[in-house]
Image 1: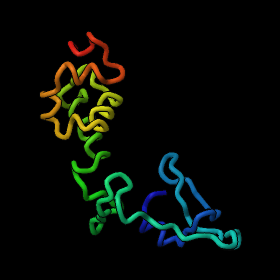
Image 2 (image 1 turned 120 degrees about the horizontal axis):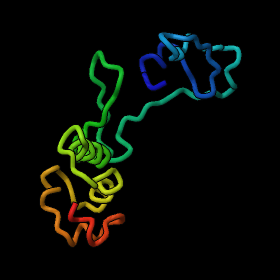
Image 3 (image 1 turned 45 degrees about the vertical axis):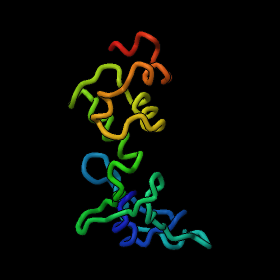
Image 4 (image 1 turned 60 degrees about the vertical axis):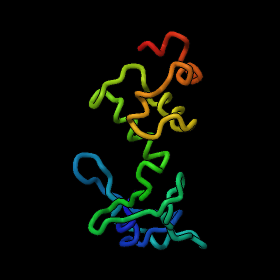
Amino acid sequence: MHNADEIARLGLCIGDTVMIRRAGDVIPQVVGVIASKRPSGAKEIVFPIECPVCHSAIEKVEGEAVARCSGGLVCGAQRKESLKHFVSRRAMDVEGMGDKIIEQLVDKEYVHTPADLFRLSIGVLTRLERMGRNRHKI
């Protein structure tokens, strides 16, 4: 369960026993909390107020269930996912540029925007794990 509004509505705490039912085809739905089985000292579920990666504020848009990091591409996690999409088959279809390569490029601060991918030198690429001397030709 990841919906903060639903967790608050149910009064859910860490360690609670819940009743579930089948909803739709197979997805279980939490119907309620069995208060009599709540452990003593049960703690309230507290959602983060800042991104654990870049420490930007977490924003929740009115009417939406999810909360998101406000960091944009300053956030390393968002940058990685944005670049993974950019090189994916559905976008630029860059052969040989998988998740592990993108993670190294971002972690080592070689790439900040998709345009940076086109400026990478052979020297930078060959310093990465999984990138041998000939792999840069892909």
